[in-house]
Length: 132
Image (cartoon, rainbow, N blue to C red; front, side, top):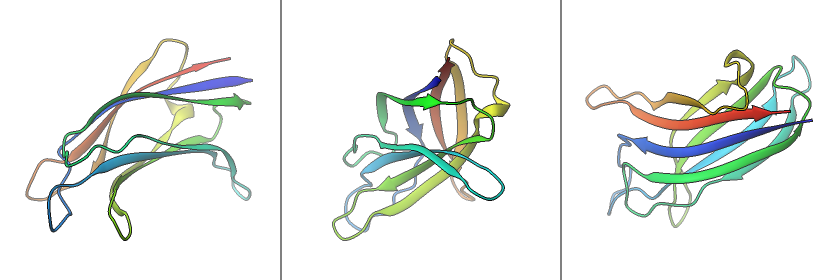
């Protein structure tokens, strides 16, 4: 059985959605096998929250254990803003892991999580590796 390691480095260019103060972003990761009929979840993890930061740096590592392979595996990434009443979605992306050719050496992955018309696109920076 394999282990996927996700290293969350940073996010840049988030757009502030708060009326008062700045956003308090955190990241939710959800790993699932995307099958035609029955998707299978292999875990969910959440990063720490960064108070009033639009370019947060995390340097956090997460692992997903007991994976049969990376075939049809999708890492769903959602960036949220921590608020008092309910959390707002700030951006998201899906990473198809079987297309990356992951191995034991970490691979840098950069993805757009929020496309903006009048400012720079928000981007997330990860390091991914897979060991069997």
